[in-house]
Length: 373
Image 1 (cartoon, rainbow, N blue to C red):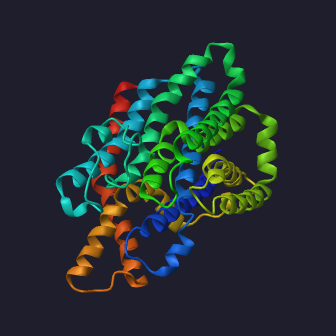
Image 2 (image 1 turned 135 degrees about the vertical axis):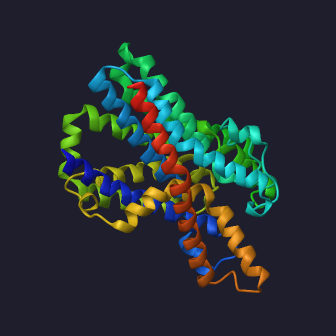
Image 3 (image 1 turned 90 degrees about the vertical axis):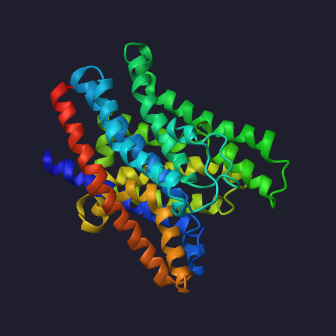
């Protein structure tokens, strides 16, 4: 049993590492950068969608397993674990942004209360208040962590649980339909070359939770079927590499559809297709027959472990390094600066690990042990 668990997480580590690299390359385009970054980083926004699929799968899988083992869910235990994993590093990053101006990659921040309440992804004006804008995805994930166990408890004792997969598909379809309605009602009439278009597109289609349920929903569906369908699980474990090939092909099609990220077709159907594509790749990563699950890599394991801290801090670190370079008239748009910035992000992630994540993880373990949850 231990071997299977380890092999499973080898594959997921590779995907977490891929996700954070995609995000880094995409966001690096907002800073001074080599021209080739524009080409290889343009689809890096899908790294967040991969994180959503992974989160949906992992969190739902833990909850389904607890339901099977104990017949219920300990909300207190779940929320304590999520609190100590998410909040300390997140609040430390907020402290940096709100007290150290040089850490800010842009001029203006949204109000603090929006970050603290994890509602910053609603009404986010990325043009005028784009500093720490990438916290939008953390808001969605935190809302997901809050609501999923409550939703499961609500339907566990009813006949709806046997229709759980149908409900999740309805949620995904709802998200797609909301993008379609929003596009026709609030986006289509705006000049696509104007700042107003991008402000509205990000604010009303890209950032809101109700328009971004595809990735999380896909991950939850995978977690559900892997837990409750013996036939599905058998197919996955027997066809790991085929799922990988299918996922890569679908992802290529998704990238073609999303070539113009803010087009109507991409906005309405692109997120769903990207989520499904990464869903196939996640299935490959958890399949015992896939080479992804059998190949352990120290580099991807470390990147996976640091991915949350790097995601939180990378824009501020890149900004500070480039500002330092400019003080000494050093080149900031070449590959050398890129490598130094990425190394700086990794070092920053290590700082988070040793000074924030590890101490609070120890505190969490003591609380859970004393409470016997």
